[in-house]
Amino acid sequence: MQKIKILLIVLLCFCAITISACDKREVQNTGSSGENIICFGDSITFGYGVKPGEDYPSILSKMVKMPVINAGVDGDTSISAFKRIEKDVLARKPFLVLIEFCGNDFLKDIPQESTIDNVRSMILKAQGQGAITVIVDVSAGFFLRDYRMKFSRLAKETGSIFVPAVLSGIITNPAMKSDFMHPNQEGYKIIAQRIYRAIIPYLKSE
Image 1 (cartoon, one colour):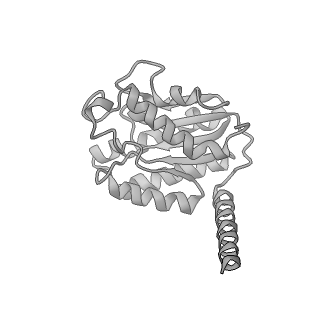
Image 2 (cartoon, rainbow, N blue to C red):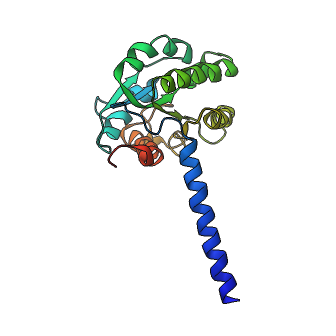
């Protein structure tokens, strides 16, 4: 009986290691030769509601050993963002691109499928440049849950890293927000930590 238990433990460990290895291989461009982490998004990436240096890309830059560029624009939709991807992302030697859009699309009644298609196009553009891609999902609980489910599927489809529900526990906590929607410095710290945990296995010299 003891031998059987030991055999089962070894088998489970082997399966866990195998699954982990497969998951990492599924992410596209893990051998990226780019130089910068590009945070491409709207006001959540830009850092609305806090001082310069308190936004999540600035906080993330202190946690990693690579340059981090904040390419967030307040009020951006996935439509307007796609028009600037060449200048703000592709021309900046991207190693890894964090893509965070949907909030303004939702507020401006842009069809959900259009948002997903636009983000897919962003991913393919960045991957074509050799970059690792990351979908940053700003849902929380039932808030924007449909986007979270579709972004999860899109991440699997495109071989992107998925960071789900980064506003979870923030959007419902006044102590973590600067207004009804945007995080304060403490909220952005949590977002940076959640993103860091998701991308650290793929970073250079980490």
